[in-house]
Length: 153
Length: 153
DNA sequence: ACTAATTGGACCGAAACAGTACTGTTTCAT
DNA sequence: ATGAAACAGTACTGTTTCGGTCCAATTAGT
Image 1 (cartoon, chains in turn red, orange, purple, cyan):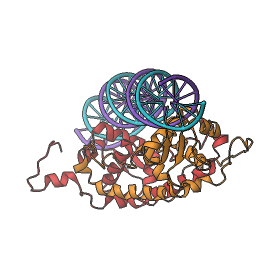
Image 2 (tube, each protein chain N blue to C red):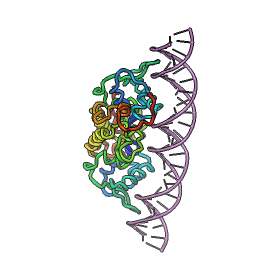
Image 3 (cartoon, rainbow over the protein chains, first blue to last red):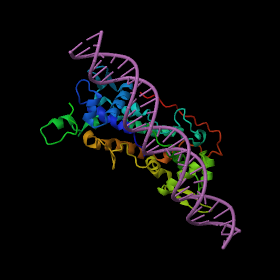
Image 4 (tube, each protein chain N blue to C red):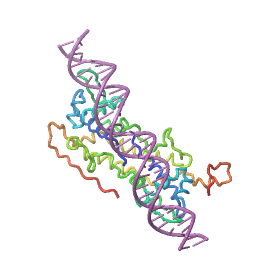
């Protein structure tokens, strides 16, 4: 199945939530806010930090913040940060395509790759934000009957 | 890396070549014509047959032929036949998304999925045929160099 | 009916991925 | 200064998926 990795999925969720916070946010907080397991959140954020998608602040009172506003981060950027380059064919660069000389489809794949990249670049994290619950913690703290699985603050 | 499986890559190559043949063609012939290992060609064709992309003729003098002309077979069709549905998120159908209720991004992923599907549906195998060597045996020395992929921003 | 050719389906090993844990480094608060 | 909090990097493990191979079912031709 042509699907992106779970990590990328988590990354998008975490980034959108991060974009709704003020200042820096820690992994544990983001974990509780999104429902994603803490080690996984940490891993994702670490990767995103090395790729420059988020800025990290080390030490106590540290955390992460977006390097750019949500509107300027495309889905393609996130995918590339986590999964690496978007290249649908193994042929493309230094690939071990045995039939390279015979298949003769090399240039045509670029057509497909470009189409994919364009599609993914046209969607930003801000587009993903719509209809998103503002914050799980707020919902929990609200005077509703909604129960909180964990009560750490 | 967001990439489609090698099988899908092979499938496209095999299908394009198959569309350039008359009557039915056997796996061994297609293997020699494309340079793809015979067992792999056989496997790909088998899958494509079950999905109705190609029509199979069993027994002696059997072989495969396209179910539709190249112009009517999109890349999306091939990918779905080999790799299964194109759904970038695991959430989508019957998924085991733990954070479904909290991430709140479910509907937005459909936006991404649609974009991808549209992009892939707009490209047909006929588009991939251009610049393709007619047959390996005839034009053995076709260089078919392709451009190195651009460095990702 | 028999044989050869060809597809159909099942099986297995290898590689990639997700997830977890541990250790080290940096920084704030006391 | 000292301790605690939080990120950084590395390594390990279990699971899944993918790529490839082998054997059984089917059919045309003689």
